[in-house]
Image (spheres, rainbow, N blue to C red):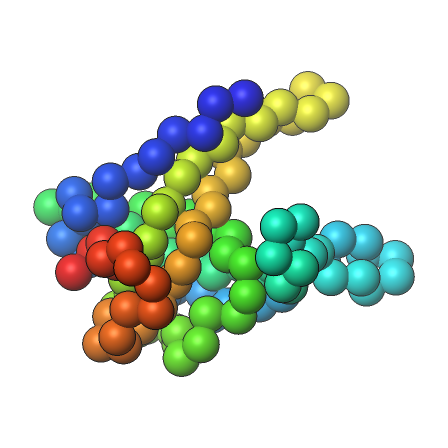
Length: 116
């Protein structure tokens, strides 16, 4: 399915609504999900995306633990994408980002973090 880029610059504020937690790949064994490209553990962060008078909370996956990201903290999100999915009659949208960092932290990559 298509991966849809999301322009986070359109949001007036992005806040951590649920702190980072490792994603579990197998509930029976407790095995954590690992990113295929980097080998890092995949974390999920609940983000509140605010624009004007509306706000939405979405769960966003990111490879590696987002250092310093805490509940209620404004964050910058780099390369946020949405991927629609369907499996056995169930469907939804999966969100993934290249990086989630505290808004006041310096950028760790060449790209400028959005949501600033």
